[in-house]
Image 1 (cartoon, rainbow, N blue to C red):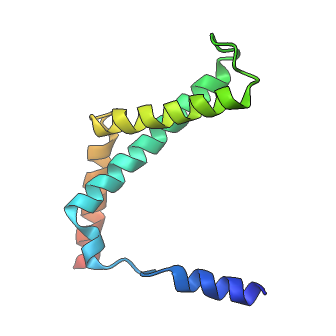
Image 2: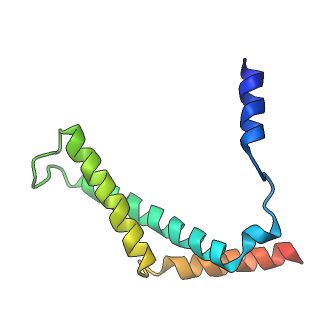
Length: 104
């Protein structure tokens, strides 16, 4: 059974080795922005968890927690796409440098 699961998982991977087309400037930029968004989301999550009780009184409510998490995710995406903390350009520069070195 595990062999069939593993083979179906491997079959679902369309391109396990990145091709040169996956290193396009647009994809590199999008990856950098998404990574910055994930970092911002983690910072917001840790700040919320360290803060104790919330002003809405939903700290023990699963629906409230889910709402906060979704809000934090969307806020972090918007913040990162608007320039965020300025990490995306640095990440993008590093990815482009690595992409150029790999292409030589």
